Amino acid sequence: MTMLPAFLANLQGAFLPETNADPGFASYKDNTLIFKKSTDGQKNIIIDGKTPSLDIRIAKNVSVDLHIIVWAGTSGSTGFRFKLAPYASATLLFTFLGNKNRTVIDSYSLREGAKLSICKGIIHSGNFTMQQKIDLEGAFAEAKQELFLAASGIDSVDLTEIINHRGQDTVSEMENNLVSVDRGNIFLQVTGKIDKGMHRSSCRQQNRGIILSEQAAIEVDPQLLIDDYDVDARHGAAIGEINEDELFYLLSRGLDEESAKKLIVSGYVKPYLDKMADSPLYKRIQRRIDGKIEGVGKNG
Image (cartoon, rainbow, N blue to C red; front, side):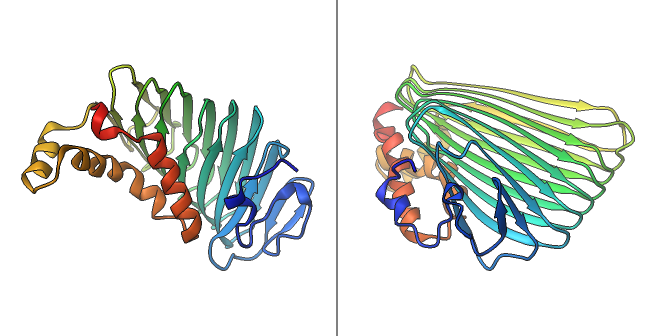
């Protein structure tokens, strides 16, 4: 087993697939987790470099709450395939850590009435590539995602998000919050597709990015591919330096410039951290995020 950092190795109740142990909250065999009953609270799953892929299947009417922590001590790829049966529900928190080159490919298939809520925190160092696809296969399926990414040093991040509406009355909402400092480089392409005949579907995207130094870069390419008229589809992207009006307001309230800038950036981080149930892990992750964007008040 890859050597894990102490704060992960000692995480209470964590399940590591490569140990083949009984997770206690699902049946597990051949890199496949099958949930036939709902979880009691948030469950931690740790993925390291020796688990190249994990299939997660959630049975009809079952609700699960998972925190999936990806720690890569070596370069390589990781894959996730989620299948939600009719009226299944999944609340997924992802934390991506490590300092080696990593590619993540994750896909989600939602049947009728299934509901998916994803929150991702990418605090990885080095080259990081993610290719994500969500297929809303059945009527009334819903998928919502919030993503936080911090790139610093010479980090290079390439993200692709695709949402396919293949059922009527389906809903997707994507919110991406990006922070780049030093020479961090972020590229994001997010595409929403609504097929012909998928009436009353809703596809919304919102992308925000803060650039905190002259050499940092964020590029966002939002796309909507709509083949039906009776739908709601919209996207937006706002990339730039810290808003001067927000900064002025906080300074007028007595904050110094460095504290004011850190408070603004914290608004990008908070939705991700607030979904973490394990408080000791919360503090560790918060410190790692602070380390990636340290000096924010001096770089802007």
